[in-house]
Image (cartoon, rainbow, N blue to C red):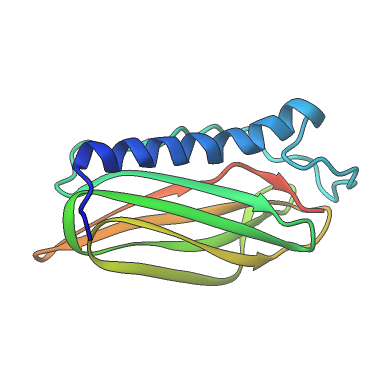
Length: 164
């Protein structure tokens, strides 16, 4: 199998990140929320939070990340994450935790899911989580790498979505 150059990997990752980021943004432009539904929220909305693509300086191996949340509109959502290392590492992955807005704070719901790959520089994965219509959700994602005894991690949050 032909290995991609580092530039090709980063370029492909950036294009994928852009496509995944623009999908919820188009829904925002049409209806004001990431969901096109007329679902009535059960709580006031959470504070607005914007997190761009994660680029990490000061790490030895952990280089960048991307994360997203997609409402499947059947009382489930998809959490997705991409973790990029500066070189092939022993282990690279992401931990996925779904959080629900209570009206005053974010509460972790359901079990954490942990996925990883070995001997590569890119991890991309996702998990389906159960939601309840009318509540706001976000993903709490921990990106991590481990190589030659060095462990590095960074926490990121997805955008917020109102579950259908």
